Length: 379
Ligand SMILES: Cc1ncc(COP(=O)(O)O)c(C=O)c1O
Image (cartoon, rainbow, N blue to C red; front, side, top):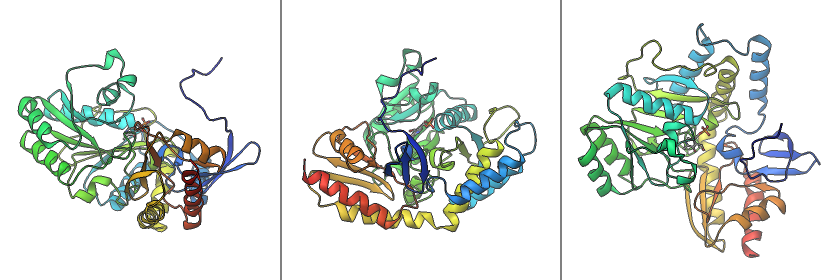
């Protein structure tokens, strides 16, 4: 059997990883400045992560959600404490798309309405409702097109107000990323989220914050929207939550009523996934990673801001979009093949997406900074 060929692949075969480095099958070392799509939060194979997962493997890896699982409770408690959202409830699933799917459904169960407002440039995943609120015609199949999903322009308050005016009584939820990631690190302008929140309250609409990429400390806040002082009704998370172990979460405001069977999953919240997610939170807390994210992000921005060919830098914490005056693909390839540094791209071809582990060290950022300087000075 062959693999279904949907991914453009670099010809690199990583077989080992530690911290912010990877090694391939020939023993070549690579610096990971992309965290495998914002997934690696506490560094590859963090010793504490390894120990906690191995210990869990020796006990029990999985049983279904029909029995008590204290690890889920421990995870919820620790997540509540570290995020400052102790009053929310947690539903565990397996991925970002699944978290969004459940969030959209929960909102609709709650207010009985069936339309969803989403924004230009958004990415919310590839499952059915999640892809319907994703602004990329290439990945939305005909079966997913539906007039119930209403697109509004990012940062455009006037259009937002018009949409609420026209459809407010039918809109169940608004879904928005804390910071748009795949769209090219696009930060909501001051007041945009506050306006959305105000309109949602006025029209009995649920506000869903997709923090799958921007959450878990990446922005220098536990969740990016917390910087703006707004309260979301539902928050979705995945990526950095398990540091590579598949796990997603839906944080649900206490105003939502749970009932047996309302949501469900076979694998979500299994013992191994919880052990991984608990290890992530323990390391984030004990090693002060949100502080490191703020410091290292500011350091990188300051060091690269005057490099040639950079038009703008959009950044919060270690979520960094470097907009070049050209398509970034050659720069990205040179960084990878000549300097052995992984970086990311985005839907905006000019934007290099930088998402290193939250425990990146200053000397590791210097490797990237020096390489980027050399590449940009020689194009
Ligand atoms: C903001 C956002 N939401 C949802 C998703 C989908 O997550 P997953 O690939 O885990 O389904 C992604 C993935 O890139 C994302 O960036």
